[in-house]
Length: 139
Image (cartoon, rainbow, N blue to C red):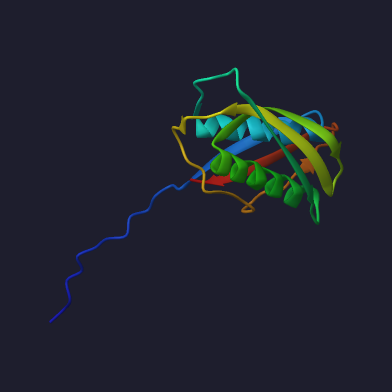
């Protein structure tokens, strides 16, 4: 006599992909933050009260630096309930950065991102000197 299963595993797309292309590494990193904010869809009630955070990081390579940076930004989003619409780099090298994030308090977010993954991500410089990457967000 066979056992009847009362559950079924369903396939579900649990990620969002963001393709970023820019003419500088600085723009690639900042546009990745802006794209992430668009995915989160923050609700901001008061644009008079501005917020500011600083992030300083080192990583083994540029791809890890971008992913670690975005995860730090995401952590600040979750901890402080903030959205960022301005990224200012004090320094940005292939293996390290120091950046200031500016934005606003968010009352809520319409979407959630659990993590920025390393899956299939590679920051690369194109033949024409531009930069590009595909980022996968775990939602």
